[in-house]
Every structure is written in C-alpha cells, then in structure tokens.
Length: 204
Image 1 (tube, helix red, strand yellow):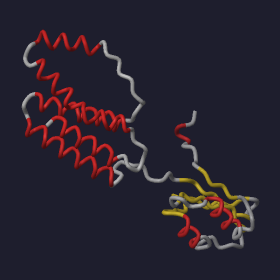
Image 2: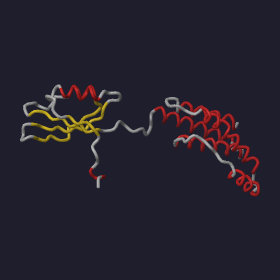
Image 3: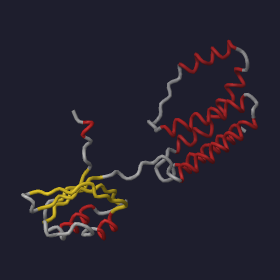
Image 4: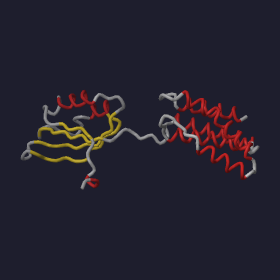
C-alpha cells in the first residue's frame, strides 16, 4: 500500500509539473520513499533504543540531490507522511490523506494559484499641445495592454508639450517595440519612456 500511495504521489508530481521540466529521478524517489519510511516505522515500533539507533544511522547518510523548490520539499513531506501513516497501521488515513492532498495539489496547479500577475509598468508619452490626448491611444492600449490608467498629465517645455504618465500591464507576448513604434507615429516622434518605476519609499 505504501508503494501504491507513493505511485499516486509521484503521478501527481508529474502532472503538476508537466508544463515545466521535472526530474525523473525525483519521480522514482517519490514512489519508493513512503515504503522506506513505512519499513523504518515498522522496525522501530515502540522501542526507544531502536529509534535512537536508527536516528544515528540516518545522520551518517549524506543525501545529494539537485536543488529544488518548495513544491519538491512539500512532495517529500507528503510521501513521508504517507509512509508514516501506513507504518503505524493507519491505512484509511494514509489513503484519504494522499488522495485529498493530490486532488488539491492538481487543482491549485491547474489554476495557477498564487501566481503573480504581469508586472505593472510606467509609460510616459510626450505629446504636442495641439494633440488631444483623450482617446488618442485607446485603440493601441486595447491591442497591446490588459489594463491601463492615466495617472498624471504634466506640461513641459514652456507649456508647448504635455507629458502623460500611464500605469499599464502589457498583454502576454505583446511586442513592446511595435507598441512604442505605433505610439511614435501619433505623438510626432517625441519622447516615450516605458519601464518599471522605482518606488521612492525604498530609495535611500
């Protein structure tokens, strides 16, 4: 049963990481790890002397693996918990725990839970005074951005120019150069700045 639960955990790991490269060795490890922990628990039982001896043996073992992320560490703990539960005879608990955690894991992965949205950027456009900035770039914003808000309008060069400051989130895969080139065709090839503005509160 420990091997079966390990196989389920391994399959969940591969499904949740199919969009990125996953380690075949780690997938195999997840299959056998619950059985290993299960066997250790059976050997130890309630004998404190055995527990201390096995603890000393495990401290002599040096584990080497490719550095992973927090999800890999969580997978190891899930496999260990399944092995502990089967070793203590809690088969129903081990099975329900593995299935529930596996289902939740896959669902959260499929919906990209906790994934950061695209980074917000600052767009500054300089336009001549005779250009009405209201609605001047709306079609371009619809084509290249997911969201946009006009934060500030400032006059420059003795009032002959306007500087527009927007907060935008670019669409995934949008061509920033083409976006800027399209704006240049409308603002008379004046200055355009697109980037991530530093937070003044974090600056010394």
